[in-house]
Image 1 (spheres, rainbow, N blue to C red):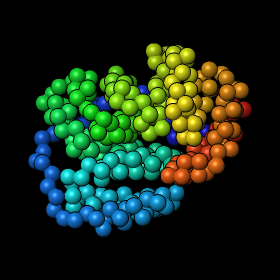
Image 2: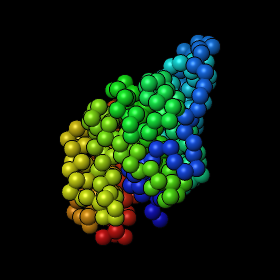
Image 3: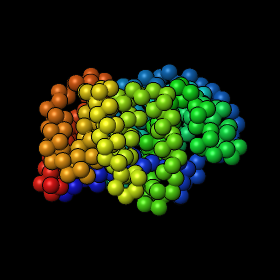
Image 4: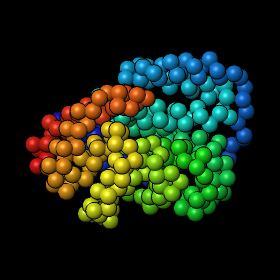
Length: 292
């Protein structure tokens, strides 16, 4: 049986901005955050749990500790930044294998909210423009490089949530996230192992609708690999979104086998992420006979 959450990654490339079924917290007026305590111990607790994130319970414990740290110090932008990735990882590396779509949707939704909090702290001028009703596409260029991580993980979580919410939600604001990712690409094409190029690699298999632009997709994936050859998920997405649609079985098998052959510690700081990608690649290898 094909894991829905793996194919979900393909559609996530067409992520949305504030869209059907969800109201962005960026439009809400709120008092400035105030630090009420010392979050040091909770931050260390979260870090200790996060180091064991291949265990789902450790991820949940890390999230809980970061949420408690955030309650103590809501002025620290690094806390919601950690949370927005942690929620993404929870869904993408744990809940997906349980086929818990409701749980995944809830995790991605929390990741969006955490991303919005980080955006407010790192890009207050942008957040103010959105709160005052300025269109996202107009306000996005005001986000500088410091705000890139918040903007990227906000959009990534939102895309995953929107995919699970339904096709209408997914398609309603695709231009907005496209503008977000274009800006991320301009700010730093190398961010998170070539993430902006990875996004466009997926996106151009879908747009222009309905057939996409496969040459541009391949070029984007190849550039992401040039940026970091050791980030396994680039090859997973390249195989899943591009090679499968292009009917390129040779490339598909080459990519998934390259991932499977990667040492777990090819990126020492991302061993759990690499192992998860290798697990996906092994599943995709099993599915190859059904694709070609």
